[in-house]
Length: 140
Image 1 (cartoon, rainbow, N blue to C red):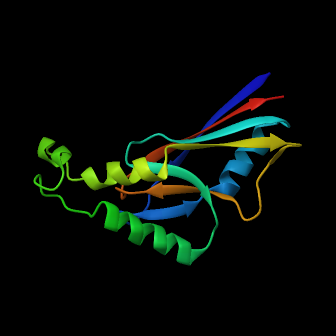
Image 2 (cartoon, rainbow, N blue to C red):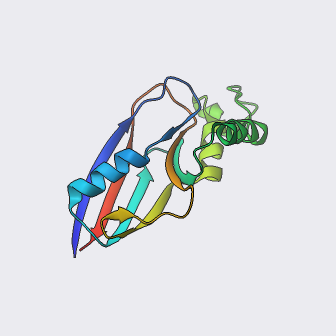
């Protein structure tokens, strides 16, 4: 068994955004030379997410609106206890928790083994600075 590790740098211009990173992960998979195994894609920051879903703009707007209803942006310490530490991103931590930290996708014949319409997304909830996404592929 072999393994291959790569990091992607992400920096969204907005505080909240969703970026389709499927083609970047596919490029890393090709570079790895691994034909069969597993591909882990992990947001390496506590206010960002990686998830699998459909690449449909209306759905992405729905995600953003739904998450904002669940955990509205509000920097006041009275809104989130986390903000009392001097931070202003308590909502972003909660949004990440809902959307998830990572995905694992099977690799079959050198390709990501997706179901219909599935794509990999980076979700940002406290953007405008560089963060990393880990791509770790294991297999043969």
